[in-house]
Amino acid sequence: MPSRSEKTSELEATVVALLDASGYMARRLRAESNPTGLSWSETITLARVERAGAITIAALARADGVTPQSMRMTVQRLERAGLLVREAHPHDRRQVLFQLSQLARDTRADTIERRLHWLTVSLAALDPKEIATLRAAATLMKRIAES
Image (cartoon, rainbow, N blue to C red; front, side, top):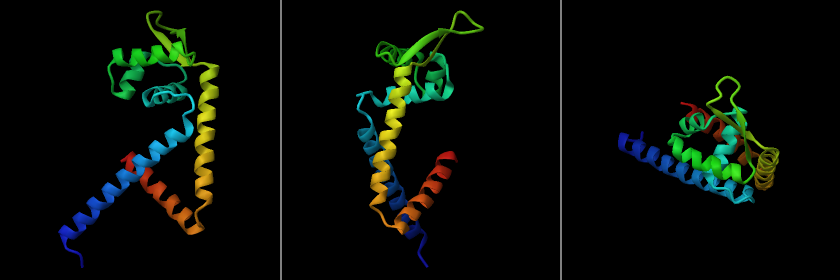
């Protein structure tokens, strides 16, 4: 029976391996799917706007844990690039909402397609047991992320 310190060492080794693997996977997915040259914060902002539909800078800043001034700079870059469009808030004329432009929707769809393609090709090289292991790991990773 493993001692408590052996269990702790095994857990710590698993944590380090998981952090390394998930970080590398995230970097690879970004590299495989980012022909636009957008920064990670710009990509995340577009994804948040896509989920929200139309959203204020303040709400984006809260969701990202950044200052409204910092988010305003990101939104301005995306607006200048033609990826975000402004619209008046329907109930509060003092506020401005931002939503994705058609160019941004097309870019997001292309990004998702590139990620899916790269990952599908990569997984196709694995054997069925490895794929099943990854499916189980994905379920566990999601559960950990939601805890």
